[in-house]
Image 1 (cartoon, rainbow, N blue to C red):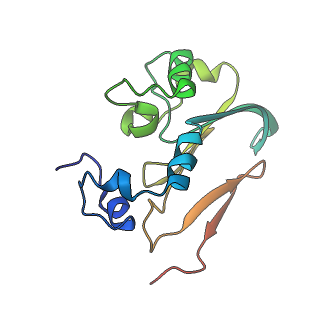
Image 2 (cartoon, one colour; image 1 turned 120 degrees about the vertical axis):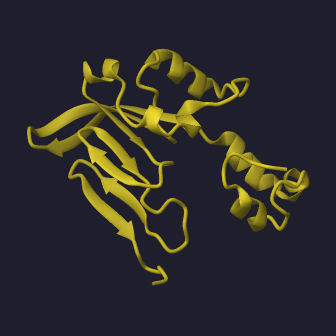
Length: 160
C-alpha cells in the first residue's frame, strides 16, 4: 500500500508495517481521543507583535500548513472548524506552495498566519512558518515568542 506522505515513522511508532491496515487497531484509545479532539485551526483576535512599526495588535490564525491564497478565507475557516473530511485534500492541513503566502483578504486587518508542515523556517512579515525541524529527530523543534518575535529552539538532545 503506497502513501502520498512519508507516514512510515508513524506506522513504525505503533509497531506495524508501513501501509498496514492494522494501524487503527494498534493506536491506543487515548491517542485516538487526543487526535479526535484536536482543533484544525486556532484563532486569536488580539495578539501583539513587535516589528519595525513598533507594537501592533493583530489577529492570529494558526493552521497546520497555511491558508490558500486564491480561495475565500471564510470558506476555508468554516471547513477547518467543522473538520470537513469529505474533501479529497484539505489544503490547510496538507498544502505546500499554495499555502505559503497570506491570503490578500487577510491584509486588510493585520493578520498573523502561523503554521508548520513545510519543513522550513520562513518568516516574512506576518507569515510565520515554523517547522525547520520537519519532525526529524536530529533537527530542533522551534517556536516564536510573541510579541518579541524571538526564535526559540529546543536543541537539548540533538545528535550531531
